[in-house]
Image 1 (cartoon, rainbow, N blue to C red):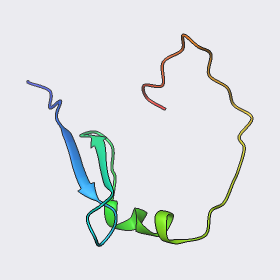
Image 2 (image 1 turned 60 degrees about the vertical axis):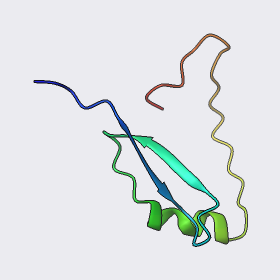
Image 3 (image 1 turned 90 degrees about the vertical axis):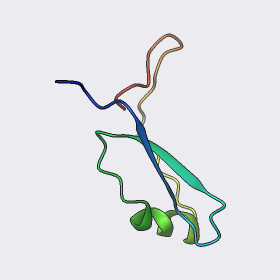
Image 4 (image 1 turned 90 degrees about the horizontal axis):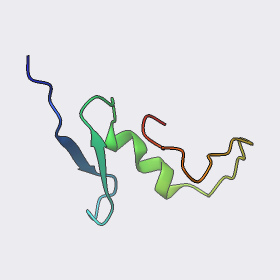
Length: 59
């Protein structure tokens, strides 16, 4: 079995100015993310840190 390794992409705004890329194994709905760039900003700190040599893969 050959594992799929390509990325998917989709625009998250009507003007096609903001494009999102994601891995094939992530269930992303670009249309559902449009609200994230049209609503007022919100800030939420998680108090989680990643060290300088730690990978962000899988986050």
